Length: 264
Image 1 (spheres, rainbow, N blue to C red):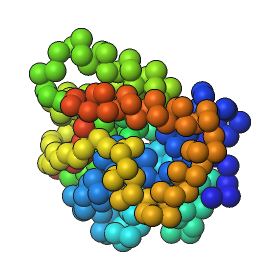
Image 2 (spheres, rainbow, N blue to C red):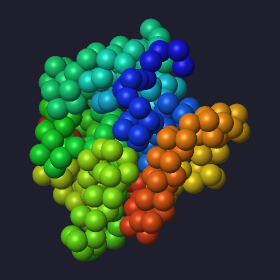
Image 3 (cartoon, one colour):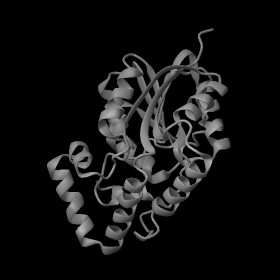
């Protein structure tokens, strides 16, 4: 990857966790890994659809979307460096514009599908609702909103435990992560006007060796290990993130939801 990553000048100790992993060579940065991403994209029925992706990041999901032969692809990315990375990944097969996920600047009812991964989790509850409202506005009646996020389990998890997990994640990944339970994710989408079509789960195993190997392949995994061994500060961060995920593994999961805007 020749283009600079976001936060390139920030040191490893203070870099947001997902961009730290990207700096170390990790390319699949989704909580449920490549498998849940592909399942979500299949469930969203993207063939022949006008697709909008919110916060495409490295552009890995964008290339998977394009493999499903949509009628068009548009990425909306708030970070300049990430927009360059996605543009490079897709070439002339689609377009990427600068914009906020809650205020894309796209025309109303101009998309058949909106895709967003591992980004609602990082927002406050009001901003989650604002992004969902924007997805609803951009979608045509009958359009699908596909998300892949981190979730808490079970649905009746005590609020005190939810708070402890969110604080631990924020300290570890340097982002104010606020995952929700399945019930809370569904309620948020329904409150935004959507009907729920599909809910699925996968293990939140982002840093477990088996998942890294499945997502990155043998050479990619070797590259990550080499980079981690060379950077003591990064190694400390990665081990701390992994320990946090493992400490709360009984209550952390990855979720996909396909929500549909009601037909007119």
